[in-house]
Image 1: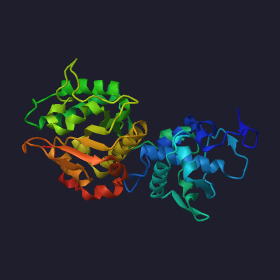
Image 2: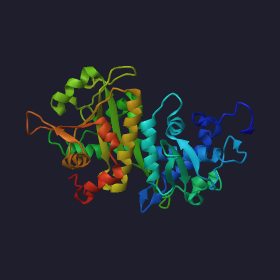
Image 3: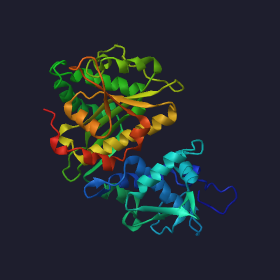
Image 4: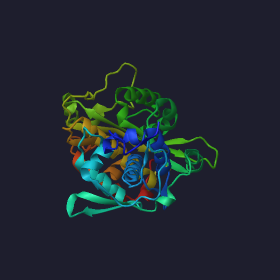
Length: 372
């Protein structure tokens, strides 16, 4: 049923976005934007695409004309509109989560694209006038066209699906482990079982990067995986022990107990462990690494809202290339008693979330990537 915004009890508050601009109508725009490339690089991360579409819809809603809801199609003719940081927080994260700082960071990220700019309104720091530019280049005539014509040669992030993703990611993760002399030549069976177990225990922490090349007619390919988990305080001691004592993915056998206990909702939790962060060695490009890095930040932002006490991010670089990459973006090595052993990497969560991936990845020379 179509309604007008000038009716009583009009549902047009920012946090009611699912009422005035339901997910099924936002989705085609989000999917299109996720595949949008500029100079052969993605313009938006998946989260940025979602928030940009919400902001576009909110701007459309704020126009003077009688906008019918629910909104099904967006207009390119959006005049500058007022949007405070609090409104942006409600729009992006919901009424119950006053994420003003996160909303401010997201608006800054969107303003680094060619499609959003903002200026302070009436001199107030947290009150902005938003301008959406070049929208005529993004308007989709209909939802079917967006799916048929805008998914060629794109990469995008998605939730890890054991049934669809394991066949792609297990071989290149196995090749990583095989470079370590402490492991057998192949641990594919262990990795397959470990990934399935992880996906059951904390699926929110596992995201993949998929590549689509419809021009070749080949099925899409999963080219990257990140797995990050909140660590129960009882397991914090593991970060003061040899990293090998925490191995699970390459040593998994059915029924074994994970050496790292995960925090359940409501538990005290100060640490998050990135237990897998890898791209297919043939797909190590700046574009793909940036998308996987940005998606890692998205995972940790969501985790921080669930566990406000999070302070430190840990990981293990089990290959020299991964260590160089992590150190180039700000991770530090935690000292170990055995200099021949692996090291823990660590970084303060707030510092990790503040990293500008686009800028910091210029510190890493992708020509030096070598997993042999």
